[in-house]
Length: 187
Image 1 (cartoon, rainbow, N blue to C red):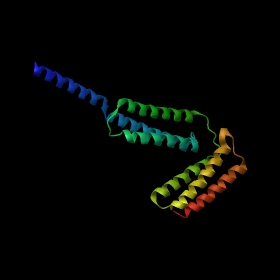
Image 2: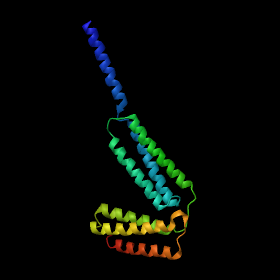
Image 3: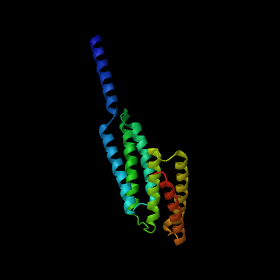
Image 4: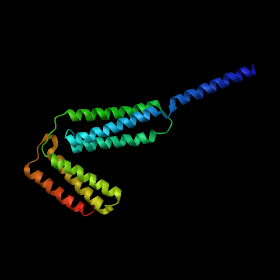
């Protein structure tokens, strides 16, 4: 009788441990699937920016959202988490992918892509200069403030599909030229 109770207790304990392991694990397929979705989303954003189906502002917004999801993904990776947590992460990735698809199908204004492209390119140069150490901290901050101001003015001028006037576009272009010239000192 004692052995039977002990055996039953061990079986119950084993089942409890097994069911706990079944609900709390690393879910490698979930990790790979999430990584694949993040790569596809990043490519969609890049392609949308290249083709003009996404504005620089939209691309930046989507990249910021993706970065937040990537941070949460890194926290989940290689840890024992529930399937529900992975499902939430996948839901967020699917929602972001859907938002990007909807944004890319909306008609976009193709006037002034040059200034928008230049803003994106200058942002990349600032980011690369900071990360490589070529750009001193003080200048990096100054360049970022100047670019943020230009970007803000550009977005204000073009919000709601409005076309920037020739003078407004020329002013943005002149300010971008000046920033680019200053950045070239640190190449």
